[in-house]
Structure formats: C-alpha cells, structure tokens
Amino acid sequence: MDFLKALAHDHPRTLATILFLVSAALILVLGVQGIEHANPNNFRDQAVQIPVIESYADASLFPGDFMLEVRASYVTLFYPALGIMSRVVSLEPLMLALYVLASAATLAGVYALTVAIFHEPLAGMVAALLWMAYWPNPGGDFIHSPFVTHTTFAAALQVWALVLFFRRRPLLAAVVLGVAANINAMTSFFVAVMWGMALLVDPQRSFKQIVRIYALLLVFALPVLLWRMTLPFTEASLDEFVDIVRLRLWYAVFPFSFSLLLWAGFGAMLVLWRVSWRFGRPAQHRQILAMAGGIALLCAIGIVFAEIIPVEFIIELQLVRSTWLINLLILVYVARMIAHLLDSTGAWRRSIALALVMAFVLPRLAIEFFPPDQPTPYPLMIDLDTPWIDAHGALVALILAAALVVLLWAVYVLRRGTLAGSRLAWTLGWFATSLVGLALPAFIPAALPVAQQRATGDWRAALVWIEANTAPDAYFLTPPQYDGFRMVARRGYVGDWKDGTVGIFHNGWAIEWYERMLDLGFDPDAFAFASMTQAHLCDAATRYGVSHVVTLREWDIRGETAYENGTFVVIPVEGLACG
Image 1 (cartoon, rainbow, N blue to C red):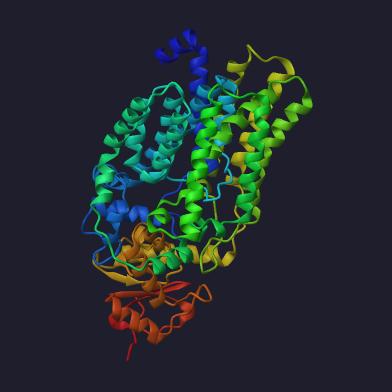
Image 2: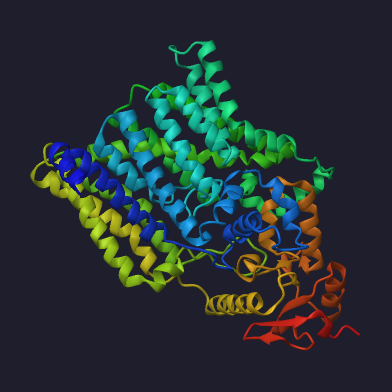
C-alpha cells in the first residue's frame, strides 16, 4: 500500500497506465472473452488439449486411447509443462491463472507496441481496446479464446518480441521469440519471417548482425526443433492426406475454401489501413510494410502449395493463418488514427472514431442473435458465451462496472493535461461506449437451438455418470458428433469428429482417424453421420475392443442399459444384443 501511495505521488501517470491495463485486462477476461474450463460439445480445442495435459500428469489415464500415440506430434512444451505443474496445483486454477496472465501480457504488449511505433499513449490505449475485438482473419480467429492455449500464451511473448524489436533490442527480442517457439513454433515462424523482411530493408543492420540475431533465435528454439526432427516419419498417401485435411480442416488450411465474408472483411481492413496513413506514418513505416510483405509472401506460398501443388509440410504450417499479424499492424495504425480523431476539434471527426469502433463491436453482437454453424457434418451452432458468466452474472457485472470506472479514471488522469472540455468528455465517452459494447454480448444468451442446449446438458450428465461409475481402464465407443468425452469422463474412447484437428500434424493419424469416422457412420458424400444400426454398432464395438458403448436414444439400440437420460444410453458391451 505504501508503494502505491508513493507511486501515485511521484509517478501518477505511471500508476494510471498500470491501472488502465489491469482494468482493461479484467474487462477482456471476464466480459469480452469470458472464462471456460472443460465444457463439452462446443467444438473448442480444450476437448483435445485438456486430455493431453492430464495424460502428461498421469500416465495411467486413457489406456488404449489412440490419442496417446498421436500426442507426440502435438509439438509444444506448453502442455507437458502444464501436466507436470498440475501434479502440484489443480489444473483448473492453474489454467485460469495462466489465462489471465497471457491475456494481460498480450494487452500490455499491444499497448507497448503502439507506443513504441507512434510514441502516443492515447493511441496505445485505443489499441489495447481494439485488440479485444474479433478482427477478420481469413484463417480464422485463433488468438482470442476463453481459456489459455499454447497459441494464446505464445502470442503474448510474440507481441513482446515485436515490442523489443521496435525498441531496437533485437537480441533480447530473439531470445523471447525463441522461447515462444517452444510453445508454438508455427506462429513464431510467422514472426521470424516478418523480422527477416524488416531487417533486409534496415540500412543500419549488417549481414553479420542479422546472422547473430537468427542464430540466437535458433539456439533458444532448439528444444522444440529437436523434438520435431526426431519424430518418426509415417509413410502415408499424400493425396489421401490432402483429401482428409480438405474435408476436416478446409476452413483453416485451404484458402480457396475460406469464407468470402472473412476475405472481404480482411480486404476492408487493408483499405482502412491505407486510409490511416493520412493521419501520420511512423519512422519505421518502411519496415512495417516489409513485414506485411513477408506475411503476404507466406500467404502466397500457402495458397500455391496447398491449393495448386500440395506439399504436406506447407499444409501443416497453415501459412494463411499468419494474417493475424497483418491485422496487428493494421490495428496499431487504426488506433493512432482514432486517437487523432478523438484529439480533434470537430464533433464529426469524433463521431467517425465512434463509428469505426462500432464496426468491430456490432458483428460480435450479431452472433448472439444469429449464431453461425460450426464447420461440422452435424448441426452445431457456435456459442461464444461461457457458462462462468451464466453462473456468476451479478458478480461479473459488478467487477466489470468497477473495472470500467477505474479505466475511465485512468484515461482522465492521463489525458486531462492535453485534452480539455468536450474533447476530454468525448474521449471518456468513446472508451465507455466501446467497452460496454464489447462486453455486452457476454450477458446476452446466444440464440442456440433448444435441441442443442438440451443435448449438451444430457451429454455432460452422461459423462459425469461415466466418470463416477466405470473403471478407469474402461474403453468406450460414443456418438462421434459429441466432443469432450475424455476431459469430462476421463476415459479412453474410439474418437470423435473434433479429434481430427490433430491430424494436421500427423499424416498417419489423419488416415487412422478418418477410417474410424467411417466405421462410426460418416458418409463423405453427404458430409453427415448416419444413424448407427444394431449390426453396425456391434461390428464397430468388436473391431475396437471397447468395454462400453454410448448410444443415442433415437438409434433404438437393444441391450442392458447401465445409464440413460433424455438423449443418451450407456450399455456395457457384454449387455449389448449382438446375436
């Protein structure tokens, strides 16, 4: 407390900046993204990641599950480290703490990056707010998440590596990026390419200096590179692998299949970026253009060697997902433009600043009323809300209101010396309106189909029963349309549609996974799962040596039921009527 008093007295602007970032992080975590842990049937990556972490913590879990064989291809030190740490600290609070840390660090990094480029604190504050919005990324938005992933944790380090780069601390930046590569090598590679292009157009950098920077980067990235190079190579048909990935991950790997709406949104961002140049260009503008050119080159390579001349290694790199880094650069310029508009004397210019941020706020709000379908061969609509807010709505609203007050006070302290009267009032109003708009969707129940909500509740209830009433070595066959079995039931099973996301890193597993989906009723021509018949289910149960099956009631499977609810039935194999 004495430290804060001294800081407030001697460095009030520093304290205000810290409070701004802390309150912004609270709004991001509690309101904009929310908090989630182990929620099934929502197609999120925790369905794969939590079981991987738990298997590193306890090697006896999931016996017979093929996912354990694939785990080594999930090349990141993040999940093994979490597994070891979860032996000491429970996994849920551990992941929550890392989630808050990563979100706050990324937000602070975006602020610091903007200030490093434009030297304007107001632009940095605007950028921190804009980061909360879901920017149109052709490869899908995979850097915003209601829980920590290896990608979101690495993104925090990567943003700070860029901050150090623009502060002309390239060697330290190389160390940070090398560490980040051990967490997510793919996205760190994107940043490394950006750097290379920027260094090439920097007349102050010699070839020897560039070599030194990349040598240091490689040294710190060596653990994950050695892991990747020592993986056994699985001989598999390239054509078959490409066909499976195109079927399962078209929305992240094959640019010709990406949503036209995302491409149009990304194009609009590029146009907005060009407009923002009228409001000033930083001294590093040429380097930033070179960085964007590096990402454009990656995208061109990704298009050619995924769509035209398929190359497995290029497909695995998912190069078009690097467009999030161009969005980050655009965000910095747009933040500076909005700060300039807010700092102007014309009310119409300030109105443009509000209209710009609303263009990012309103699409997220629209998803609550018109939730889009997930890219699955069965009905599943996306739900960006998190149950944590539903369970603690009043508390979350109270914390968010307090955080908003603190944030506005911080903006007032930081801007009262440079803005006065209506300009200061407009700035405070802009932040208040924008943050309320960004957090509001969390409190609006998504318009999900009643049948989906009921099935999700029944699925969780069935998994909770299985975890409490079956042996740890039980092995299951389940409807492949429902994910999250391992992370709630904590048992091994044949697999589901979500498991296919790991196939991008392992061609042998991609083919194995696809064969399992065919055995579980997948029809590639109809892009749908057929209902399992008694004979089909018995054949699959025998083929995979399961001890239990979970069936849908609508399948009308005969057997001695161990558990049932409105949607699902659990039957031990010995009680299954298989003739």
